[in-house]
Picture (spheres, rainbow, N blue to C red):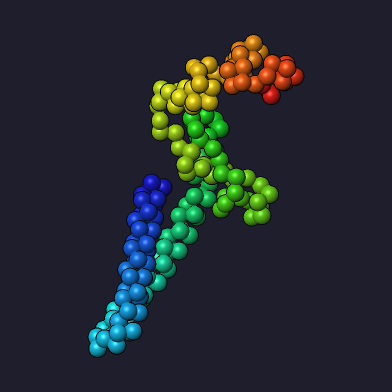
Amino acid sequence: MGNVAVAMIYLNGMVQAAFQRRSRLRKLLDVKSRQKDPRLAYYEKAHAKLDEQYHDLKRKQSIAKFIYEELQLSPWNLSGDFIDVHKRAIRNQTMKLTGIGDPSGRGEAYSFLREEGGRGSKSSAAVDGALNAQIKKITGTENDLRKLTMKQMASLLHSYNVPSKDIEKLKRWDR
């Protein structure tokens, strides 16, 4: 699957580059046609050629996308993704909720495909450090909000100038 993904990224880049070349030449062609340039026929031929190349690459991209999606839906890939996420409990991995792997085709079921952005490549120390930084950003302290006592939460709310009578009314979750 890795080589196919790399090929898709390469092909997407080729399509984007062809689109940009075609767009730039189209703008130049518009300028030259207003100027009544004698080389206008050459610009038109070049634009036609770039347009043909762009549409050929788009066709190849759609074929490659179809093949890539079919490979993702193969039984061995679906089983492997499910096992990686649920049985092995690899960190930060999730299943897709919608998309090509939805067996109902209407968004009424869930997919067994792994979410692409959910691959866990960070070490646990880096993840824990990021979590601690996020906690400090939220609370202004090293304490995890979930582990604070009611008194500690009241003290924290006092530091944000919340009146005591309002704090006393709040339940744990609201604090």
